[in-house]
Image (tube, rainbow, N blue to C red; front, side, top):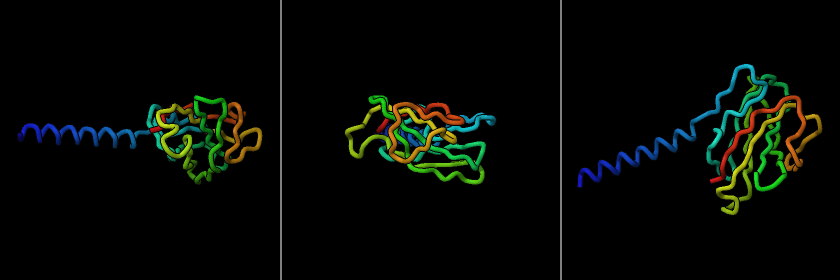
Length: 143
């Protein structure tokens, strides 16, 4: 009985540590990259509303995060971002619709700097916007 309890404790702690690691991980950002997404990690699972964090080399730049649900051609522009003086930024992004209808669906995330055409929240360009700089694409799955 004691052995079973110890095994249960070890398995529970392992599951807890694994879930914490996924929440704590960050994408590696090379120092010379003009724009990068730090979180969520490439391959992570995200909720309907998830904070996307990153860094831009020019803190005066205009940054937008774009979400692309792979099931459709549209690319969804996320809420306006305020860039901090150290170049860090974050936005509470939407990954599909509220509820379970979009669970287990794949998404791509990109951050763009100083887009060539004006963007606003909820715009749906058919492709990634043309911009001064673009981050690498981060691929995630909706929980």
